[in-house]
Image (cartoon, rainbow, N blue to C red; front, side, top):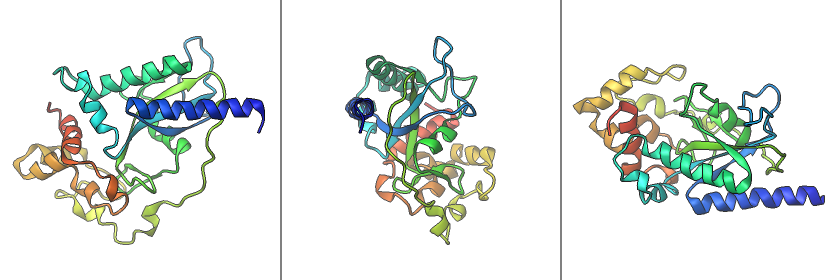
Length: 234
């Protein structure tokens, strides 16, 4: 390994370590090509490396719950916490933060995630991870001017290919998922209704029926937070 490559690997390892310490999972990265839709750096240069950060199961959830944003009563606490933590991480590592919920423009985080990790689209439309299943999320990314050497991604098949039963497609109480479409309005109306209390308080029933990554399934307070955000309740 060259000295340059050695420095790059050490730098990525330090980024992973610091992210974990601050309450985020480092979700891999990639080197954008000219075809990838990535934001320019402040001086107009194209980033050479994009590294993604987020949650894996509940592992990072308690860190957020202990943050001031979780208790200040203001809107969008998780987005504000994510930006604060990732911006600070970027300052320490010489990178610029990029976020999924601050458009337009709305950056294609799902496409980026499929470059950074071995992910596939599930029948629910959510990206499925071969280990974490549907229980993971992306909170932001850091754009680097220089090339960081990244871990090699080994080929891994989609777990959905081996799932003949596909219980996720039968579990939704209002049939919002067909495998090729998602009826957002029907889903939201159900969650807002008395009949949708289970989905509101424990998370999407279809998602919970997926047999992949069940050890990473969100606990009720974590799932309920996202469901309330989905229907616009605080």
